[in-house]
Length: 149
Image 1: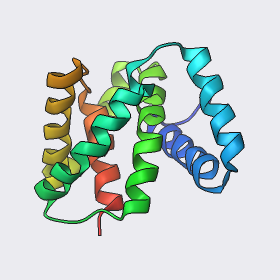
Image 2 (image 1 turned 90 degrees about the horizontal axis):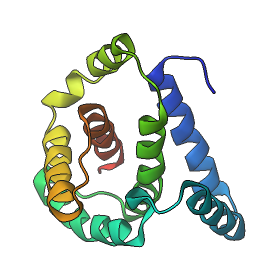
Image 3 (image 1 turned 180 degrees about the vertical axis):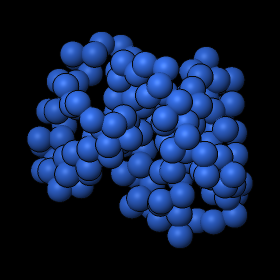
Image 4 (image 1 turned 120 degrees about the horizontal axis):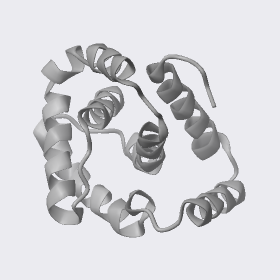
């Protein structure tokens, strides 16, 4: 349990995931992902079907943005996205914290990356019945913004 601003929690989890997936050894990462899947159970966010779908749709996202995303960055983003979304969903945010987060993401909603994230959300909903909330869409937009060339 981290007692801090929700955005700081997200940044912390992202940093932790970076160290695990980029700097961790492959065997450790495989064991960790297996243990997490066993602990969480059958969650769509951790499914191979979702990963395959995201890998396929990245090209559409790049076209929507009009920019390429570095292949190594795409791999990392797709690896950590389910865990970031799960951590967001695991945060018990009161109304004030939710509004504060929405306020933090105000500028991102004006970016093309936000529209690309909304389109991706529509595709996720149509294909898997998975709907991201506004905070999750904004987080995805931030990831797209930070990883594009």
